[in-house]
Length: 326
Image (tube, rainbow, N blue to C red; front, side, top):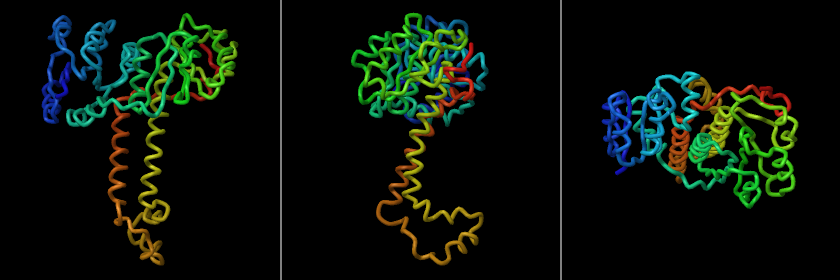
């Protein structure tokens, strides 16, 4: 039986819903449970906590909770300040205005670890929070992250046929950007892999980052929050669109396009001449196949639910390596 630690204002509601689907739940009341008491608890499969309580101050409580299990936060609303605090703690999963029934439906999906068979993201970054969030995002969509600390590691056999992206934190103090550019173009495997460069824009963008030849590797310099939003959006679409196309094919979408008319009598007149010449949607395994695809579509929607708060609007004219300013 999987175990969950609750640290939320609506503990009783959430506990009842989670126990109903077979979880073992331990509840601690925010404000009434000392950090030392939480620290003495055993490990859990997941920790569910109110975001504001979890990341208040310098995030000491989050660090204690993180030692107990992977953390999913709950929030009534996400302000700019709260978002920065959550991101600085390395938290990827936040559910906004989530009731007990929805939480019970989403927890098994959030907690499911996929095999990472879709490929690998190489992350050149020494920030633990960034590694945590990127790892959580890509793992949710069946990729895995390999985190490295130096440029040398990047070109020492890490890049392979399964590498889908290279992510580079320009804010690393030890990053030799000119060396990265040179080694990248000397590496045949690297040249076939797209690069996303990013940094915490609260630090600004420096001249050497714009004139180092970085534009030969990537078109963009993203803020850290923009990177997270782009990854969530891109990976969600990559999983969603093929499933939609598959369902369209199984349901003979083009052949049955006339059935999208506003009223049934309009449908009839549009189809009247070929009313009895249509492919049988009830034959063979068609309905079963559609049911399976719909199930996968629903899982995809659930997978992104706790990550969609990371989506941010990006000005396409403001992220160019030639135009971005601090």
